[in-house]
Length: 365
Image (cartoon, rainbow, N blue to C red; front, side, top):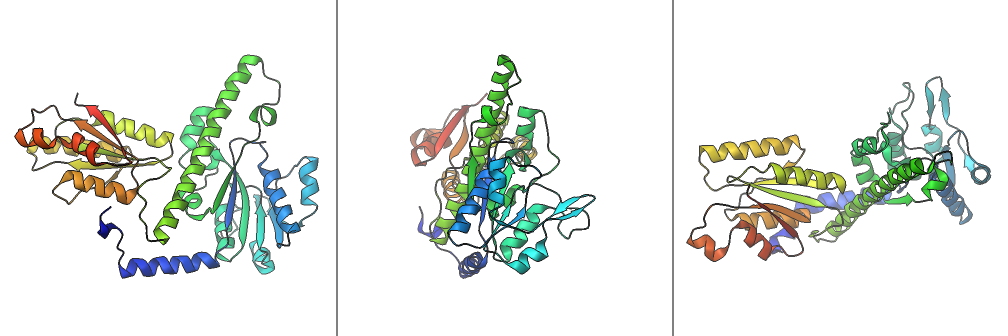
């Protein structure tokens, strides 16, 4: 990695120091993520609260579901509960009482709720953010279908789309730990009234939801790793999260590469980037590049415009800065000149130089 990639400006160092100081004063958030209702999120979250209480931590329950089985109710009875505020439009955490009480840990069973209209915060996840900023740690539960960015996939799997949404950025920026609750789905969800074929279909759906929950957890872990490495003065040159970079050129239509990049990004809950590569394009070539970039934006890609005259160096520098895991590049069908035959085209140069990054080469159709 070039040395200048490690060197940070005084402003960047100051911002990191200030962020670290705020983090020390802020509470910690642990999210118990389920891929379906009934997999045991409430039990695991409340049971961890019970164990913390027995170890001497000051634990308070701030929000509960309406009905629990006997084993969960037995745990709740051992803990202090601050009742929610009820109204005709729903329930809300009693933020003022919780902050005044100032426990070490607040337990919230059900993160994905909207608050009644009279509340200051429209959403419960905003209440959690306020508690964290007050220095109170939070254990909370949520199902995968309520997370922004995965609802389209969940709807394709289940046919349902929940009304409540938790922003993806909240989970990525606020969660310090995420636990995927992985109870046997056929025992806890299916209920036993389906015939064999229906049970197989339902089991396949639950398996896909479970995979989606695990991928979300990977994204959070990757973001934490990235933050840790940055705090240690190290740039992340790899990651557990897929980050795909598509190189579009003036020689071909990049539709196939772009659509493949988008599909893989969605499948692995990753990030999607596009870089245009062109050296003094003519009018027709510029039109093709513009069309490729327009489609890239429609697909939700982040566009990176290189400034280095050497496209290979620019692509690899960007890839190291952003932790790119895969580079998609098209193979030119234009007969190579002597220099290109000696050095290799862009695809060949990337394959030679991209250590630790997969380079996927697409034929020029």
